[in-house]
Length: 178
Image (cartoon, rainbow, N blue to C red; front, side):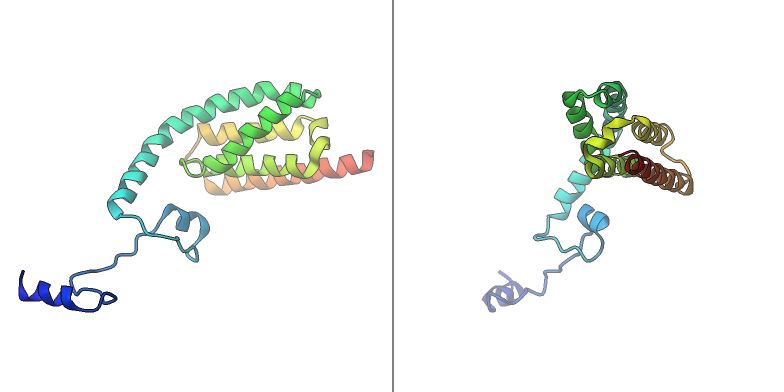
């Protein structure tokens, strides 16, 4: 053992040896939740790199899964709006999964459109299923986001704003009917 290493091992247990350096590694959670987020623990940077590499590899496959889910959603809208409670449950579950996972796997606008549709279903309750218009416009927006992932963010945000206006108009129309 060298003199330097003896000194570092003979100090107080709470002292940081001079050879140790702490490196702050930004996490996915910090990117999603903001810089105020404090992780409860730190991961080894090599493990974090491996996790990020794995996530990047899953992004391409998740795009294919999203396309399949979109096809399923399109087949569920009519029966769900026709009163089929099982179709309603499946449709909501798929959209809810999209809301939570799409952004993580490189499809943030799909996630935002799915979030909008989930919010509509959650806020409108049973009345959401009276008309399929809101569903079809959201699914069209999701399809477009999947087909054009590099689309101008201003256009996709305008689409999101238009969906919110459609929801507001649908909600207003339902209030006047009932």
